[in-house]
Amino acid sequence: MGDANCDTGAFHYASRRELAVGKNGMVATSHPLAAQVGLDILKRGGNAIDAAIATAATLTVVEPGSNGIGGDSFSILWKDGELHGLNSSGPSPEGLDPDPYLTKEKDFPTFGINAVTVPGVPAGWAALSKKHGKLPLKEVLEPAAKIAEEGYVITNTVSQAFQRTFKRFSKEKDNYPELESWFKVFAPEGTAKQALDIIKLPGHARGLRLIGETEADAFYNGKIAEAIDAFSRRHGGSLRLDDLKSFQPEWVDPVSVDYKGYQVWEMPPNGQGIVALMALNSLKHLELAGKDDAETLHKQIEAIKLAFADGNLTIADPERMTVSAEELLSERYAKERADLIGHDAIDAVPGISDSSGTVYLAAADADGNMISYIQSNYMGFGSGAVIPEFGISLNNRAVGFTNEKGHVNTLTPAKRPFNTIIPAFLTKEGQPMGPFGVMGGHMQPQGHLQVIQSMIDFGLNPQDALDKPRWQWVKGRKVLVEPEIPFSVLTDLKRRGHDIEVTLEKGQFGRGQIILRNKNGVLIGGTEPRTDGTVAVW
Image (cartoon, rainbow, N blue to C red; front, side, top):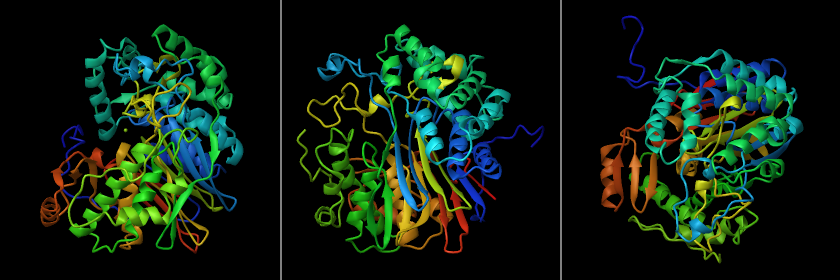
C-alpha cells in the first residue's frame, strides 16, 4: 500500500454487504456523505422528507456527474397515511423553434444551452419542504452548501464520471462554446479530476444558500434566474426568464398494478415508470421457473421489450398523450401481451395504435413517513452548460424529445419530454412497505422489474435483490449481461435467439436503493454494490 496512494478501482475479491436495520430513521443512497447528511437532518428533528431534500442537495455536490441543481426530479412519498406524487420536471422553452429539427435541416443538439429544459429540482425541493417538511429549507440545504464550500474527496466511481465528461466535452468544445463553463467549474486546472482529489465548489455553495434563503424563488424569479437568462442569451439559447417564472411542479396521483398481492407504484407519464408496470402486469400471467433460470430471464426480457415498444410510442407530456395509463395497464391488454411471449426471442412492436447518468435515494423516519426520490441532469453532467457563479449545472432533457412529426413526443415549445427517471414504492393491503428505485437511463424500469420479482417471486431480501446479477435489454434482440450470470444460462438465452453481450461496465446496470418497514416498525435497508452505496441508519 505504500504511502496510501492505492488503486481505488482495483478489487480482487467479491464483497458482501449485510442488511442495514434500525427503527428511528434510515437514508439509503449512492454516496456516504449524502446519506450521512440525511441522517443528521433526521437527528435534528427533521422528517423523512427533510432528510431526502438534504440528501438530494448533497448529491448535486458530491456526485455532479450524475445530477445537478439544474435537473429534474420526481418523488413518491407516504405521509399521514396517504401516497403522494410530485412531478418536478420542466418543459421546453416557450421560444423554442422546432422547425429546423423537424424538417431535418439540422440535428437537435445533444449538449449546450439549446438542449436544456426548464430545471425542476429547486422547485421540487421547495414544494416538498413547504407541504410535507418540518424544518426550514435554508437549514435543510446548509449541510450541502458547507460541503461544497469546504470541499470533499472524490471517490473512484465519481472520478470516472469526471474523466468521461472531460474527454467528451474536450471533443465537443468547438461545436458548443458554452462548454467552457463546465471546464471553468469542474476542471479549472485543465485536467480531469481523479479519485482521491479534493474539489471545492464555492459557486455551488452560493447557489444552494440562495435557493434555501428564498425557498427557490431566486432560481425562478431572482438572481439565479437572471443569470440563467443572461447565459442563454449570450450563447444563442431560447431559455428565458419568463420560462423560469412560469414553472410550477405538479402534485399527481401515482399509478399502480397489483402484482401477486402487492401494489407496485410508479409515477405516471411523462416518466417511464409505466413501462415497469406494463411488464409486471404481463409477467403475472406467466409461470416463472427459478430465480436464476434461463426461462425466467427470457420471459422478463421479452416482457420488458414489449412494454418499451408501447411506452416509446405513447409516453409524453401527459397533457399531450392520446392513450391513457388505464388503457396501458388494463388486465385485458396485459394478457394479450403475455400471450406473445413464447420460447424464442422476438422483435417487439407496439400493440397499441397511437394517433399521433441520475441519482436515487430512499428515506424513512420513526413516524412512518417514507419517500422515494430521484433527480437527474441526464447524460451525466447534462448539457455541459454551467452557471459558474451559482454552480448550476443545467440538464439536457430536451434530448428526450423525438423529431418525428406527428409523434406524441414530438419536439414542441412549452412541452415536457419523455423522461427516464422514475421513483417507485411498494404497498400491501393499503399499508406502506417502502420505497425502492434503480437509476440509470432506460435501465430503470428493467431494474425495477428485476428487484421487485427478486423480492416477491423469489423471496430475496432487499440487499440480496440488489446484489443479484442483472441484465439490460438494449434494442432489437441485444441484451447486456453481468459476468456473474452462469454460462449455462447465457448459452440457453443465446439458443432462444437473444444477442447476448457480457460486459464489465457496472454502470450499465443501474444503481438501486431499497428501504422496507416490517410490521414491528423495523426499517430494513439495502444499497447498491455497483457504486458507493450507503445506508445510514439511526
